[in-house]
Image (cartoon, rainbow, N blue to C red; front, side, top):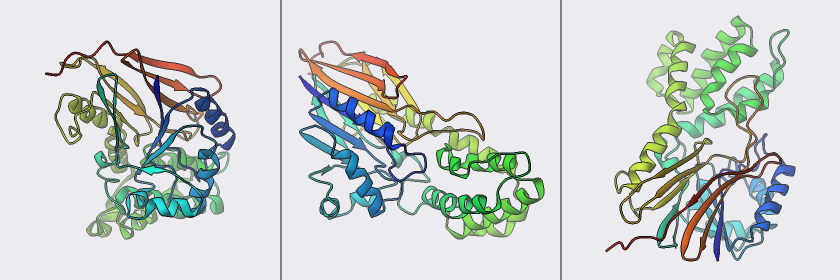
Length: 333
């Protein structure tokens, strides 16, 4: 039997990265006895050397013949020449770095990618999405720690790290700040985004005219990323769209931080599958609800010549969430 364990979007260095959960999850991954472990994107939060060193302490505990890392938008540096040598310099090696992982299993082509190339704001290094993340971490969160919230409201500045999409910071801050402070903050935040390329610079002069309601409309569009990603992935299973090469029978993505599972009927072989692996960091969508602490791992295996996929939550109250058992593949000819 051949087995792959696939995780995505660990984000070492994030304020919502929980070391104890990571340790327990690695123990459970090792119990699967995988041949290969794939981390498809965002191994770190910002690609800083200390974050890679922290990631090393966990990845070193994985028991597998091969460890493969696929660069994401938060660690795009891994796609640069010499990245493997740089990882080795912090002791993280030997690690294979691949733009995508393609394997034949049970007569089916399995493709594992990160998927940030489908997100216009994060498709390229230094894009608007990266600048928004940096502005939140280095501008908004320090401001909140210094200023605090309005009376009778308890705030957690680090919660902004868990928000998906990140644009949810605007309505959350409307709850946390008194109206005069929020209006001043909102204008200053838009100027910061404009100065750092997250908004078009020509928009800077109309900042006084922009409203939080307009930002809400943008949030609605950003929150639809998981659905649009899934739509593109399902097209790829049919041999269409930007992810069609190489044409997958099983396509696994990350990046959106939203779990998704979508089997699809196909021609040869039948029964295709799209999975989005979400994230290993807590995920929140508002100011107060308990964050989602799911720790998803996808097990891909080949048994008796057939492919299977099992999606599990490694959190203590989790377990197997979804399972896909492919029949014997048809002849492609």
